[in-house]
Amino acid sequence: MKRHAGAANCLVGSSGYRFVHPGHSLSLRQAYMTQFKPAGRPSVIPRIVTRDLTGLAGFLRDVFGAEGEVRPGAPTEIRIGDSIILISDGGGVREAMPAFLYVYVENADETYRRAIAAGAETIEAPANTPYGDRRAMVRDASANVWQIATYRGS
Image 1 (cartoon, rainbow, N blue to C red):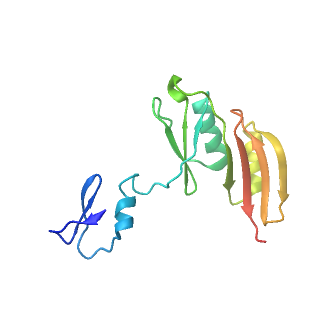
Image 2 (cartoon, one colour):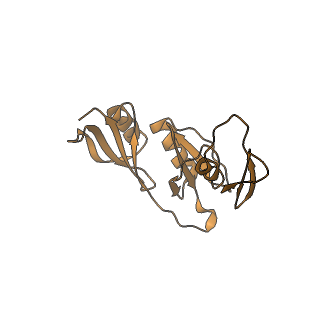
Image 3 (cartoon, helix red, strand yellow):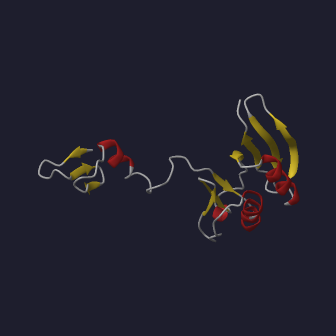
């Protein structure tokens, strides 16, 4: 990425020109980073392929208060807190692939109880860890493992 010689507010990158509003500070690195992924997206987004898309979406809604709508034929974007998870049925191309995810919540004990009520099986009951997390671990009906934690300080 380099500045275009003829325009103070124009950057040239591999995908063409990008205009920067005069008076806005945008480093060349920031300008480049906005071109390879959608704005506001993190660099890594976990994706879970499941045989039961609506069941997993419901579990995430019930347990973690997740938001998102199932979109048949496309990955479903689920938001939990400030994070994104993509879930899909694989579209007949990908096999089911469970995940192992660590999720921070306001109250690990309460979230654990909701997970059990939603059909998850206990792997570890809530307990305090030496590094300051109150943590539990469950497995959902799609074989995904969820570590549920609340940071309590070290």
